[in-house]
Structure formats: structure tokens, C-alpha cells
Length: 84
Image (tube, rainbow, N blue to C red; front, top):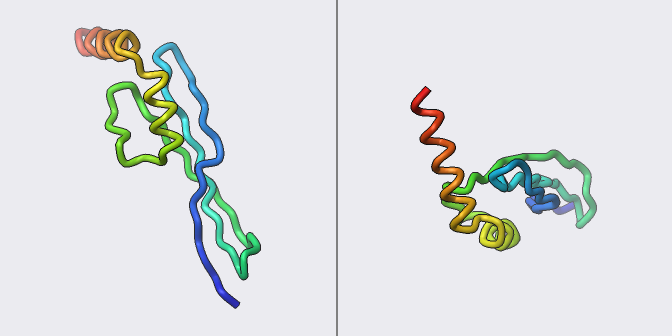
């Protein structure tokens, strides 16, 4: 009986007006290659976040949707919130 654990990026969604990237990871425990337990972990990547350490699929999506226009609009939005 061999137990292993793996994390798989199983869902990537683009949400909101500033293209936030919402990611779901499946954390699986396997016994002899068969999944015996699974849980989920979620996180969100914002346009100004450093995502260089994330899964390659997440990086590819972020590179595609975080255009300079989106990043600029998001930064303007954040600055407008600080003025309130």
C-alpha cells in the first residue's frame, strides 16, 4: 500500500471587470494510484499580483487576460478606493 498526495489545478475562471483569475486546485490522496480522498483549495490572482510561482496553466491565462489596459484600469480603481 503506497500513499501519495498530489495537487491538480482543475478549474480556472476569469471573473469581474478586471479579469481576476479564480483558481481551484484539487488536493488528492491516492492509495496505489486510486483517489481515496479529495479536497479543494481556491485562490484568486489579481491583475497586479505576482503569479510567477503559480502553475503554468494559471500563468498562461494570467498572461493572456492581464493586458496593460486591464492592469492600468485596476490600478486606477484601487487608487480611487484609497481616496474614499
